[in-house]
Amino acid sequence: MFKAKVLIKRRPSILDPQGKAVEKGAMHLGLTNIKDTRIGKFIEFTVDTNNKQAAEKEVNDYCYKLLANPIMEDYEFTLEDVK
Amino acid sequence: MFKAKVLIKRRPSILDPQGKAVEKGAMHLGLTNIKDTRIGKFIEFTVDTNNKQAAEKEVNDYCYKLLANPIMEDYEFTLEDVK
Image (cartoon, rainbow over all chains, first blue to last red; front, top):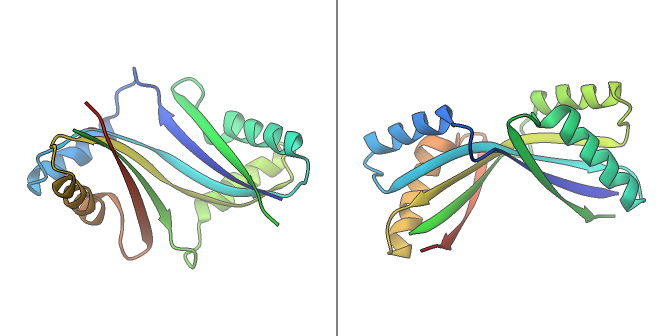
């Protein structure tokens, strides 16, 4: 069994209005050194197989077809063997 | 200047209906080994100060007051010195 951790980020060239909005809130709270906030996703799950290659393929499919929007987001993942 | 990376996760005791829904989609795509999907946030930003202690305090405030919901989410962050 593998534990997968996926990070999904907007591509650097794509604006992040949600990040901008939250950062405005930080400014109002007096947190004036915070810059360039970008908000992405962090997704964890387990893959119930003992074949690492099959697990990688399944995670890739999951990311590409469901979790990320491949037009405007990039993803990366790690797989950790767990018992 | 520091680069901050924040991970925000729901507490283990809190249900994640969004994760459950996406996982159902995976099942329909034939990705049947995916289990226990939990969806959190990944947030990146820069902190424009050279004082690491001040940067940590600011990141903590940002997470606690704005980015996370401290009732049902946990957060962790890393700070990396950049020029």
